[in-house]
Length: 305
Image 1 (cartoon, rainbow, N blue to C red):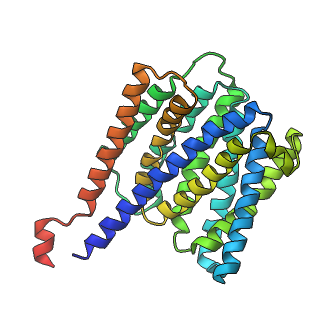
Image 2: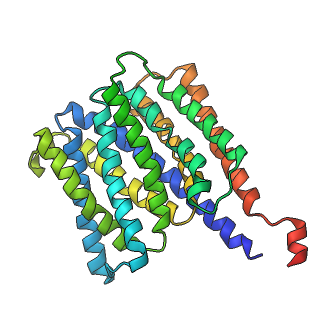
Image 3: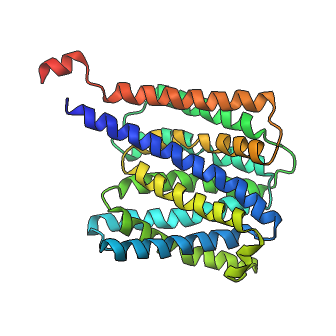
């Protein structure tokens, strides 16, 4: 029976990861609409981080929460904040040199990287079935976004691959600082993210006052809100489940994005995209079943206890 709470906690973690993927998926579609209205990506990134810091500060004041971090958690928290800042920067920069679809496919190799390196960086055992699920999920993502293989600039490829490696690192760092309470984790990580995004915005020369968000108020609100919810649920998920299962759940993000774009923007979805989405969903369901089997005690173990 002591394994039951662990099983429930992991299920909660995977559910939170899926909810985070859905939030980030809506964020992508809204960001496109905001961009069409003249709000560039770095500007939206800066304001969403600024809003997160303001809300976390308000929550800390209302809840009288402490920003203190245990000494043993500080290095992991620093790594989480730094990788969170750099992964978005590298990912957004890659689309300046690559078609978006190619950048997405390269970026979503990070679940495979996590599954391959998890046994080296954590106590998790190497699992061939989880690796197979990761490759199936990646194949589904590739089918959903339908990569355009033309115009492959080496700079874009390097940035997209760097974003993939950074995303894998972010998941490991997030799991490593799982013992840090939610409020200080959000506050200190975003205090690291803010100057990085501010520097990128300064270099891009696209800073606009907050009133500029009125150019596309609904799209800007969804973009910022999608990030806030997505990041919050991602942090909560990594406190409950290992990086591998969480990363596989995040393969649903492009599926959510395509589905939302098809419903709200009227974008056409082909048979290949439907098949890819079904493959990703199947991989996620398979991963949930495998995770339940891993934590469920065998009859011999139960009798022995």
